[in-house]
Image (cartoon, rainbow, N blue to C red; front, side, top):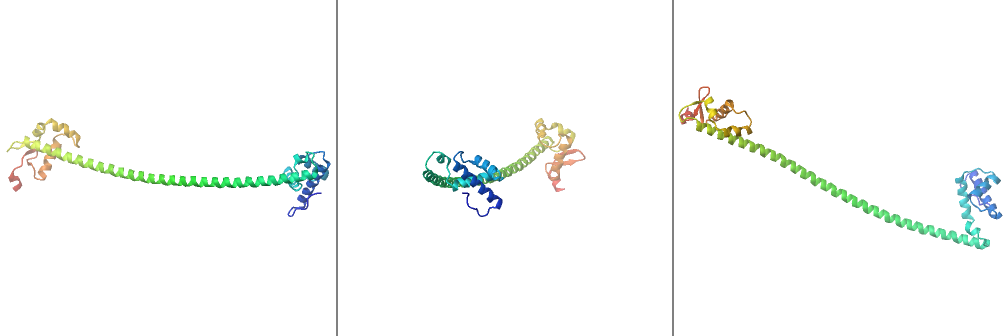
Length: 246
C-alpha cells in the first residue's frame, strides 16, 4: 500500500510520492529484484508514467525505507518477515541511537573547538595589545633619540662657535704680540708674520685666510675697544689708555 498523503505537498509531488511508494512495495512483494533507487525509478517511469528527477525520486524512496523499516541486508537474508521487520526496526533504533551519540559527540567537539578558538583569539588579542604597547615604547624611544640628536647638533654647533671664538681670540693675541709697543704697522706687513700653525688651523673655520680676514679680526676688536687701534686706512697699533679716554 502506498504511503499516506503528506500535508503540504503539491498535487504533482503527492502523485510522485504515491507512485514511488507503490513501486517499492510492488518490487518488494515480487521478491525478484532488490528494492533500490534504480529499480524503483525504473518502475515508476515504466508502470506509472510519473516524471521526476533522481533527487526527487530519491527523497521519496528514503521516506519509503524509513516508513517500511526496509534494510536490504536483512531483507535479502531469507528471514521470516516478522523477524526481519523486528530486526529492521531494531536497526533503525540503533541507527537513531548512533546518530544521537554522533550528534552529542559533534556538539561536544564543536564546543571544545569553540573554546579553543576563543582562547586562541584571546591570546592573539593579548599579543596584539603587547605589540601595540611595544610599538608605543619604540615610538617614545625614537622620539627621545630624535631629541638627543637635535640636542647633540645644538651642542656641536655651540662648541664649534666657542672654538671659533677662542681661536680668533688667540689669533688676535698673536697679532698684538707682533705689533711694536708704540708704533703702528701696515696690515700687509702684519699678515705674513702670523705663525703658520694659525694659518693651518684657520682652514677649519669659515673664511679665506688673507688680509681681508685679518682686517675683520682686528676691526672687530677695535669696535669693542679691545687690543687694537687704527691709524689711517690700513695701519694698526696696540691700544693705549688714551684711546679709551678719547
